Image (tube, rainbow, N blue to C red; front, side, top):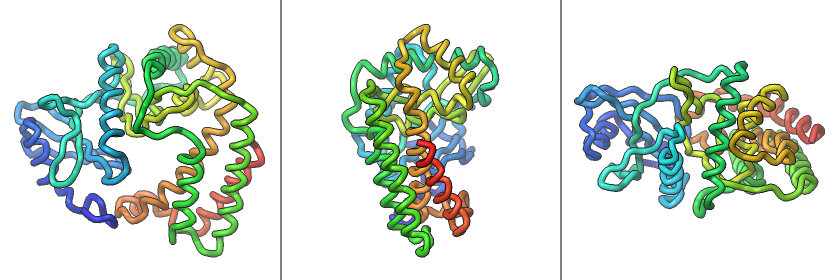
Length: 314
C-alpha cells in the first residue's frame, strides 16, 4: 500500500482472503463494483450466496468515524428502515486484513428509482423523514460536518496544491472559488440557524435501489452532520419533484421550509468539492482513467466559468 497508489496491494487474492478470514467462505467469484473513493467487490460464497466487500480508502476516515457510520446504519436498520447495514463478525463490523480496513455487507440488488413518479417520490420522502427522525436523536462525534471548511476550504486548497490545475489558471481559479465562498457565507448568514442532524449525506439516485418491495438505501460513506434538505435536493430536479418529496416527508416529520433557501448553497459547495476531490485523488490510478477530462485546461476553464456563474446566482 502506497500513498501514490493506495490500492496497489489489493489484489483479487487479498480480497478473497479477507472474506475468508471473516468466516464467509468465498468460492472465487469476484466482481468489481463501481466505486472510486473506496474499493467495493461482490464476492461469491461457497453456499451459493454473495457478500459485498467494501475496502476503505486508507487515511480518509478515522476508525471512530467508520464505526459511527456502521452504528448509524445498524440503528436505521433496527428501526426497520430499508438501509443496507454491515454484517457483524464476533461483534465487529470493521475488519482488518493486509493493512486494509473493510466491512462486509449483504448483497441487495435493485434498479434506479423512477423520480418522475409522484408515488415513488412521496415514498422516498416518508423514508427520509423517518431516517432524519432517528438522525436527530443523537450526534456524530467523529464524522465530518457539511460546512464551508469541509466543502469549500479543503477542496480549494487541494486544487490549488495540485499540478492538475494549469499554472496559468491558478489565480483565476482562486478568484472564482473565493467568490463562491464569499457568496455561500453571505447566503448562510441570511438564512440563519437551522437544525443540523445526522444525514445520509450523499442521497443521490445511485444510492437508492428499487425492488418490487420498494426502495432501500445504500452507502453511508459520506454520512455527515448537516441540514435535512441535503438528503432531499439531489433527488429533486425541479420544484414539482421537491413538492412530492415534502408531501411524503411531512407525514412523518416536520420540515423547516427555511432550509429550501440552502439548496443553492449546497449545490455550490458540491461543485467546488467535486473538482477538489478529483485533484486530491489524482495520484490514484483509477482517477485519471475515470476522469480524463480533468487533465485538460479547457475543463478547468469551464469549471472557473461555472464558479463565476454560481457566485453571480447566489
